[in-house]
Length: 408
Image (tube, rainbow, N blue to C red; front, top):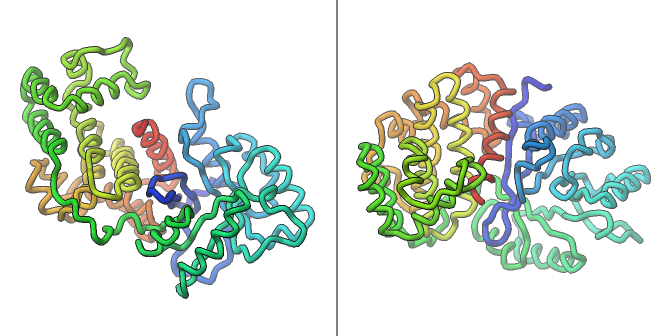
């Protein structure tokens, strides 16, 4: 294993801003902008590492990321890598520079992979090689937008889309460009665009469902009587329904079907109830761009929690989870973080983490955040928290898998 690399993920969004999949890569040193692509051995180690952490379950064969697709950079030598056979073909896409198809051996290897169902994404694509049926070679084509005229470029690529390929735009650096792509049905790798507020989002503040959840969180924090909590939950039938669904989901592992609210609350206990309400508060968001933000919040919360667990212990790590989930609440609710914190009473450590990434919990949140970006901060924070790249990368993939189980 490479003990020096950190895993970076970038979401691929469909036109509705839902996460279709992720590109996973090793962090590239930021200063080396003109550097060549990652070496083969690093790419192979990434494939091996990913395969050993996103496949599991009872049978050791389950794809833990459910319906998500993973995009991994590849070079021709990798097309026959052993680790590829462990990955589910329909969920795996290797991205290759289009020019490599000029080599007959590469072309043959790509044909074999496509026949086996593995996805291929072509980068730096100019036009289809003469006499080749593009759709038989690739499932995705990456469209690189230059600053010139995105709308014109997008139209040119929309014509390609007729061939049954999925078009993927990159880089999409502002919401206007995203909308131009979405209008033509292009998916987009968005870098960190999804973390920037979308202009013209007027839905601000807290809707009635969220108000009830906030009230419940307050009650749980004060260890209110279960009967009182149950009474409040019953005011919102969808909440009760979601709670029962959560308890009866495979993820929670109740031995028998739980029918009553009281039974559900008793089984859960206060800490898991608080965690479930946290997840729910974010999902009750009504602002226009929540699917990707929500998934980011869940992954970030879980990753921060896993990173903190060994050092801080389980119950404090729960608080780190809350901090991670809430770190995007300002964007989910269309409010400033200060306004969010006025509506909900949180422990001091969580507030410090949210406002300044300081205190006991802040550095774990900062580290989980840095893993979303190709950020040099990751290494510095890892050293400060005495965490190894291997542990962080493992937690990253576990958090990604956990978020999928939660989303069901």
